[in-house]
Length: 394
Ligand code: RFL
Ligand code: PHB
Image 1 (tube, rainbow, N blue to C red):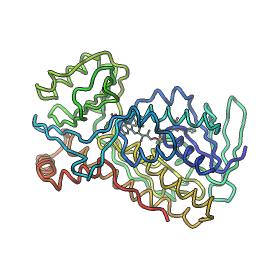
Image 2: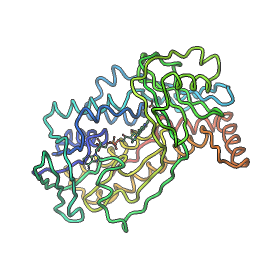
Image 3: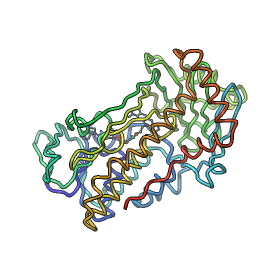
Image 4: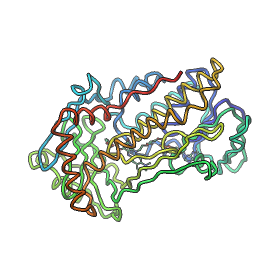
């Protein structure tokens, strides 16, 4: 098989890159380890920055998102039982975010890819990358026991944190930065109306709570839990009771509970690899970086990488701009580190850290007072939450 850009991974990152490159007249072939339904079954991100929405529009996959996505002009914090609105749009000159689940983004992208007839091979195994440093990179893999090979100009590694792309780069040419957080998030999805019109990020001495949503009839809640916690120890009833205890009475009285459609625990991790490129192999999304979900940045950073690589490859194929290929990693990393910083900041601000010293607790408290009582503080949170601007590629 031959293609211009071979993409490993059909998560949101690989599919969005594929769709944008297709719009630019560039051939792609995607290979994915799992089956489509498995990919769609993963419940993950829920908040899209306006830059991500614009990119989905450019890819021609935003019709349903524009119809069904919920535009949010604010979020709310709760500290010491006090509700603090953060009017995102007011603080950012009119910007907002859109509530539209990653599952739906992925579904729309899968549909668009099949509509335009671009190839995706699902259920592959034994994926190996060859000659990434040469002018003739290739990928070998197995499909139903048969050995296959793709020859290509470039390889886009969009295969998530546990994929093969990053692991095929020699260790001596990369540097990894990691922080493992001492807790996880227990998430529950239910067909119940959201507790509040805006998302609520609540700090509580029993642990952090996030009240999120997918639509006017579907809610997503998260509880901070110790890393040792097991999901099967959490009945729906236990989850709802714990959630109520961590919210002010006037809110918990409004909580509508119901059967969980999904319940899972995600550990929290911060991770970046530098550089995000090795010869003709580019790393994008979770393959290159992970953030704790507190800043709602995981999927949005994946889209940011796609934005840069798509523009660079379009310039390369349409105008022969080979010089731009070398700037991908730095451009992407500039924005990745800002997203890492914001996600780290929000995680620190909002969670309960049992092992913190008294001094660190006081610093956390002072941070809260400063950021939430000053317009400059709120503005900085709002600016990062709605998403920082992309740098120009030229
Ligand atoms: P994905 O979504 O992990 O997709 C990678 C795809 O690559 C496939 N793959 C391979 N394919 C071929 N060959 C191989 N050898 C392969 N190895 C792997 C996988 O099957 C998969 O289909 O990465 P991508 O596309 O970079 O997208 C990134 C986002 O998924 C991710 O940043 C966010 O979902 C992160 N994240 C969250 N972000 C938020 O903004 N808000 C959230 O609430 C939120 N919750 C989460 C999350 C990530 C989680 N993970 C990774 C465990 C909850 C969880 C549980
Ligand atoms: C979600 O709805 O899953 C969600 C929203 C905001 C976050 C994290 C997760 O910060």
